[in-house]
Image (tube, rainbow, N blue to C red; front, side, top):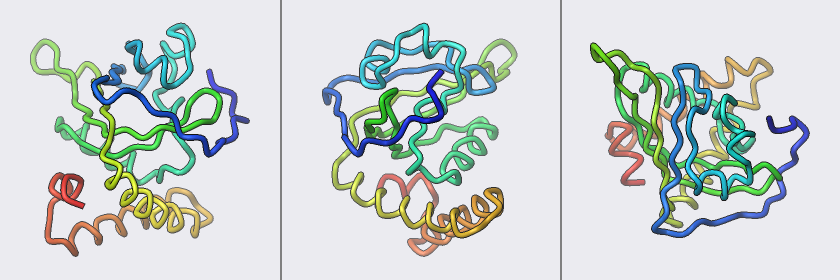
Length: 174
């Protein structure tokens, strides 16, 4: 498991445009599968990630409200797309365009989650860097992280509503 003392390096890492990062998790978000591209870009071995929370790669620049939206959407048994800044084992970062879906088993029960991540469009990364900076500032403005997450979630909803769109349209059109 990653040490909690990993400091972001501000060094960006990249992966080939034709590669896809793939991971699977159980219902609690613990990694059950990670492909070689995931392991290579994140700097972990398979043994280091299996059984760990997927948040092992969470970059501190990512607003909590984005992950709340992700989990709320998955709990509705729906897929979600998102731009995400992840952090490697050594503090470098890499951006992805993530597609996360529930995995269904017998009787249509959700048994886990599956995520494919691709190389993101750089213009979108720039736009989402700015959006996430605003959301993170709102989260940090509140002493209680839950209140901050809720406030930033409302801010995000307002940004989307101002464009007269649903989230799915927003993430593809910003």
